[in-house]
Amino acid sequence: MTDHPRIPLAGVIGSPIAHSRSPILHGYWLKRYGLKGHYVPLDIAQADLRNALHMLPKLGFVGVNVTIPHKETILALADIVTDRAALIGAANTLIFRNDGRIHADNTDGSGFIANLRQNAPHWVPQAGPAAVFGAGGAARAVVAALIEVGVPEIRLANRTRPRAEALRSDFGAKVIVQDWVQAGNMLEDAMTVVNTTSLGMVGKPDFRVPLDALNPRALVTDLVYTPLKTNLLIEAEDMGCTVVDGLGMLLHQAAPGFERWFGHRPEVDAATRDAVLRG
Image (cartoon, rainbow, N blue to C red; front, side, top):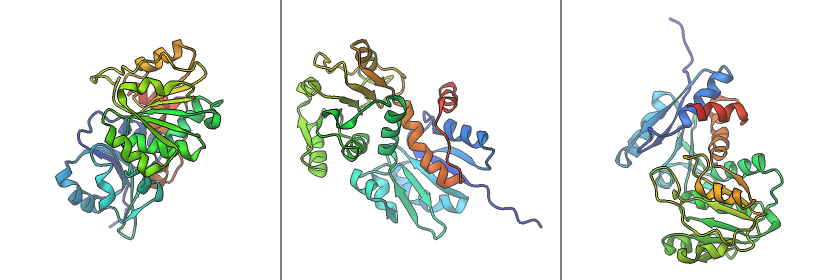
């Protein structure tokens, strides 16, 4: 009888999950680098989450990505939580360790910054305030990352103000909350503009914040990547702004997990992007 080593398994857990492009991305990297392994979508309901996390390592899983609605819940189920995941209040990457413990991290913020650095290399975070729309888990990762790279002030608006106030209380005086109905005012002299909401996504309401005050020297990015170029990015580009779509963040946030699970740091390049867009 031959003793074969287990082929590592990884995946993405959420509900719903069929729309995720992560299996396409990781599958492309596995093939590109000639690595043994599989990455699969796992539709797991909230009620089944604890039992699933207990079983996945026994089935050969070395880790998983986490998406809606589990990114916040997962922290209470992990044995080890990184400082940045704790600060953000959500995790998107789990590593199932050999000692049986679950390690939770959040790579959304680093993926966000890497996307901007790659696609807008002249961006200077310290050049002026940032305007951030939304106050969910993605916004928390973005705000933490912007503070870390030296943005001097972050103006924040959310459709429900209490959630924005909660974010401000966690991240401190650099965050200034604005009412959603006056969110357009945040754009005056802002040098970085970020939409972290689902507004503008296919099947969702439009992003209707007026852009009259938008600085043509600002960098504008949208975490939405379906469509790849949202109306916000189209309008901002027409006004002279540098724009960066949200697909690169998906690619960059995935790289650290892939490296931990499969032992190779993947390159995020044009070929990777094309592979994901082709589906």
